[in-house]
Length: 63
Length: 144
Image (spheres, each protein chain N blue to C red):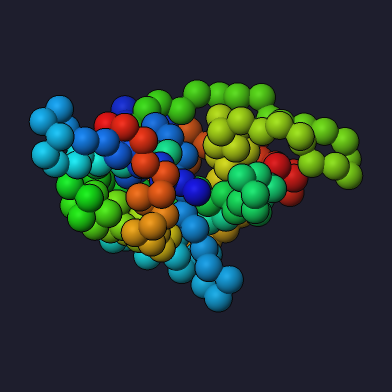
């Protein structure tokens, strides 16, 4: 899969921060919903790919 | 995605200096997909032509050379394209290792042939492009 993602909690522990990174260098940071939406847009518009929410989140590592 | 900057070809596009990978579904036309995404992201290309294929990344990869105008898509970073030796193997076997620079070199040699032989390519390529491509040996049928 072209897209990898990192997920972790902020230092306060109050909010989960995701980092998603595409092989092409595109990177997204934000909440889970933000990262999924922006990465899905990137996959569709730039790579003609359909990335499910699970595909983005399942590959999560610490931000 | 290639454009000229001060007479030097540049690799540019949404993935910057990296090759731009596009997935093509089984029921999709690769030329249509490449042309559509190129137009959506960078504006209409001057030329989109498939120059080679190879097996990699778990599938078959079709290489397209897409030429855009010199001043097109200035917001996208570009890197100069240098010359490279072609990847070669035997007469009936594909090269086992092919670098991105070799794929581009092959594509530019293919484009050199198109610039001389294909009326459509001739009509859209600028004189600067044609001058540059005179330095590339046309090898339209070499497997890469």
